[in-house]
Picture 1: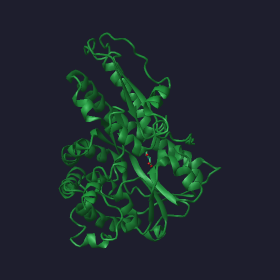
Picture 2: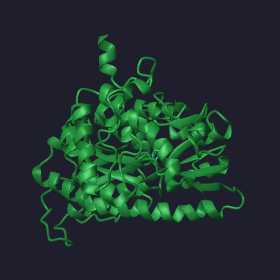
Picture 3: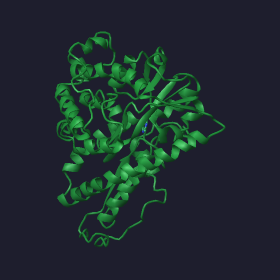
Picture 4: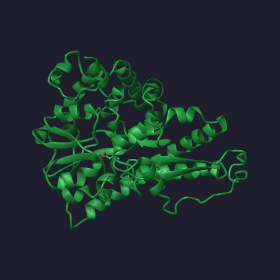
Length: 398
Ligand code: 6CS
């Protein structure tokens, strides 16, 4: 179970915290302190100035993001002949997911894994990943799209960079499923349902379109929130549902595959742009090598943890897989949210979504409903009364 050890707040100076916890080495580091040439790939790394960097993730030791970051750190260490030393900080060590975004933009940490679900007011166009039934059900195809999409890697990336977040890779942590204290099989089941979500306004909008009452909350509060009934259910990939033990406090799990969990490997742009080319190349190569590994890590964990939930006799969970017809009922309600995003997701939302829809259809050969949401679709989601405003800056100007 995820043990809530109490998130550190401003009462402690962050530099003290960073010095005191010093990252989690967990013995997995390859301990390579050889500052000579790297014997593994023959690259000369002898003249790289030793540096120590911080990498914060949104998950705890053993979970996908943490394992990814640790392997990334090992690669960088290896390629630099031990000169570049990255300390990985697990979730909870430095605050909430939103605090971690700030730590990256302020350069308090050099690297972070940030899920777009926590940047929705900072980069409204990043809400695109909250759109349900947009990507395909095949995670390999989705990962290929994330790797190659111009909409994501050329149109969206600069918008993040302007806000002090440079995404180096977008990657899937697997398909998301719903859990609840009651069955979730039709949109009717969501009427009045208290759904926990991440912070991004379009995630809330998407659940309002189903009739739910979404509440944004850090996952650090979620086990207790579900246990005490502050919220009725949540969405996450299977590995996370099981590893955070949400199944202990939920009776139902719906295999809905309504969206994939997208996350980003990010770096502070000022820090990255100030590095020597040789060092940038080490980082870039490590990011490239981690694309496949990241995919493998999430796939293994998602497969392994499904049977853990199924076999947990002390905490039985009724698992139901939605039929295609049942999914269609949700898809129909999710489609108009695309137009809500086009209207409210920032200046470039429309262009980015149009490009991405086309790319998904081209790369998957599937009809994902591009252009089907219709001109009047945004009227169907309650624009006027929505509290889920995606653009902080525009608000401030008003
Ligand atoms: O639900 C969440 O907020 C968390 N889920 C995952 C899969 N990773 C970290 C994130 O904060």
